[in-house]
Length: 142
Picture 1: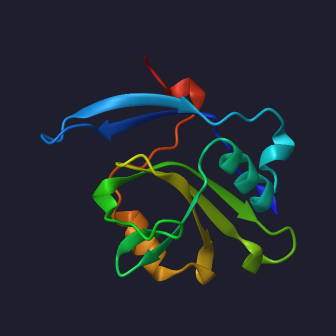
Picture 2: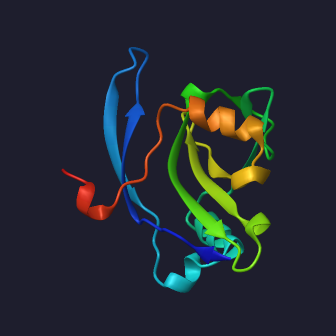
């Protein structure tokens, strides 16, 4: 698999109180070597090392933590990054990795096929997430 894009600095808007006001949070996933992000497995290993260790799946229009069983609605999570991969010779090897933070502090990832093999439940859930970011370092302002 070949990584199409990777971004290392992000600017995310977070809901931080019961009134729904937004604050900004900047963070970085440390990419010390481009080899860290060339394959889906190496990318997963890297984000787990950076603290995004929970595994998520989509069930009944909610995101479920496989570790805790906790369910999240789209407004309770933030997709802070995503990485797309393509197979060198087989389009069915395409995948997308979403890096996720929940309002309660849970951090992890969700993996899906990309393209015609994508899970429609994951696609619908991701489209319902309002807090979705992927910014290049030069796009971020203080």
